[in-house]
Length: 207
Image (cartoon, rainbow, N blue to C red; front, side):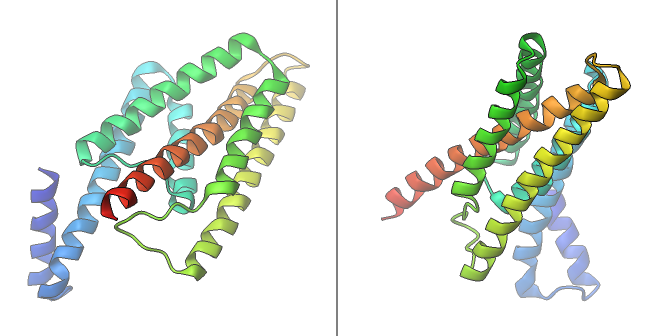
């Protein structure tokens, strides 16, 4: 279905002389990715509304889109698989958050964030076999990935401090968002490692 819609859009753009005949296939593929991405984001938002975790859904989408744009990571082989993995990862992230809220170990929380950050710094960017990166792009993506990781931890730290202050030392919703940001850093790092493993297998088969 997604492929059919993408082809219709590509044909429409071609009929309007926006793209050439040679560009139709590339345009259709790009539209498939965009449509699949929109569906994934929408599904997570819907899950967030149903489960009462809409703010976590917003943070999840922002971090998964912005940070993974530069780090790369695991991708399923089909659009349906991508949607399932995207939503499934969101549910796992909520479970990890609940566990942390139950344990309430401040040191553990920041160790989780640090672990995710180190994985990102040591492995990003991951080059997909269908999308090669130039050396200049790799250097740029590596720097941006590191900066986004630091920015995420800084935002998490600030939210945690504000959350504690406004509740006079008691746990608040801002503290939970802080926990979730740290959790997402680890998840993005783990997805990056899964992607590295998958791309490694692909190159072995290709050789």
